[in-house]
Image 1 (cartoon, rainbow, N blue to C red):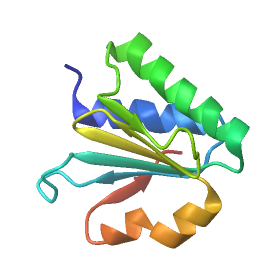
Image 2 (spheres, one colour):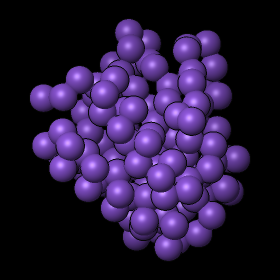
Image 3 (cartoon, rainbow, N blue to C red):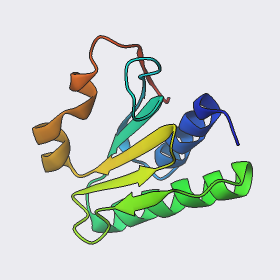
Length: 115
């Protein structure tokens, strides 16, 4: 299986390529029992959300031969979660991102923008 850091970087790059806003990778290695990296991004609307999700899935499958263990929230689309095990990708619309502020929950851990 691909390294978590490589998966997170590729997912962030894929989201950025589809013009997702405020793409962030949060390293929670050793701080979370759930995953090692969070990728969080904002999409303006449903079509962009679909484009980002599709691009992340395609790039990780094509480049690293990995598929998500699960995808949650695709119907509602205000917050879609792609679970790759060691990497969890959060694709959020502005209202959900502002309300939940996931990356702020991990403010004490290293954070970097994708680009």
